[in-house]
Structures are given as C-alpha cells and as structure tokens.
Amino acid sequence: RNAVPSDAEFIAWTVMTALGTEWDDLDRALPMCQAEDTLYSWKNARIAATEDGTIAGCLISYPGEVYERLRDRTWKRFLGNVEEKTVRQKFESETFPGEYYLDSLAVKPECRRHGVARLLMKDGIAKGCALGFRRITLIAKSASPALLAYYGGMGFVAENRMTFFGEDYTRMAWKDAKAGQ
Image (tube, rainbow, N blue to C red):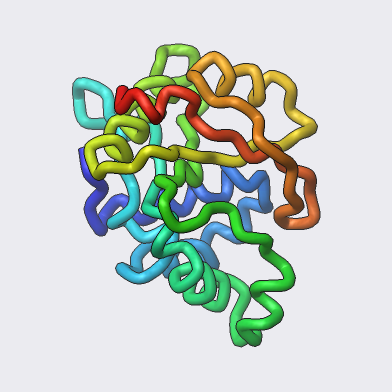
C-alpha cells in the first residue's frame, strides 16, 4: 500500500536502517519523513504489512527528476542549516533524470526471510515501469557481497561505483527494464 502520514515514524526507521546510522538520529529523521517535499517523504514510500495490518517493511522510491531539488531540502532538514554547496559536496548524486530510483529498503527483523524485501522490490520495479521508466536503479554498499548478490538475483547489474556518506557504493541498474517487465 501507499504510505500515509502516520507511517512517518516507520519510514524514518527505514531510512536510518538502510543508511546504517545511529538510532538516536531517528528523531532528526522524522521531520523529513513527515514532510511532503523531501526524498524520504511518506509520499515516496510503499508499505508492506502483515495480514493483521502490522507494518513489516518499507521501500522509498521516486523519479530521478526530483532528486536534485528534493536532496537539498532533505539534507538541510536532517543536517540543519547548511549551505547547498556543502550538501552537494557531501552527497554525490545517487540517481539522475530518466531513472526510477529505489532509494531505501528495510524490513523489521522479525519479518525477514519471508519474502517481504522481494515483494517490495518487485513492487518498486513495477511502479517504475508503470510510470514509463526504462531505467530503474539503486545503490548498495560495495562492502556487502551478500547485498550485491541479492540485488543481482533480482535482475540488477553493477554499473559503477560511487561514494556516499563517505562509503563506497555500487550503482546498479535493473537489466530487464527495457522489456518493461
């Protein structure tokens, strides 16, 4: 299902989990998830829930066209009053116009190994295709061979490497995007 404003706390947890950052940053992340004009807005999130409605996981995704504009707003909200130039120097572009970007994915520990991540990934791919995108991309930590293999098993291929948050990431693109799924 599409996220709603009341899902913002879980979306903030998703962002912090995907980034591997400190849990005490959750309160700082919450406002950018409650807002409508950030990368991590509830408007950009899809939720997977159990049969009883309990949230199991979340995927945040969006068109690359909005990235530059929303990145600056997002990180200024998270980092405080910083200059746009500083934000752009700290964060290399993750996605570009013409792409549909799968940004952050996380599943509650107790719900893992039940296909929730795969369900969310397939949903994100389908959403990108339905919006007419021929390129669907993501980044994954290069130091995580299991994660790279997981995305490879979903049909993503490595394209290049980049630095994000001071760490080495592999940029990957869905190889079946031309087929339109």
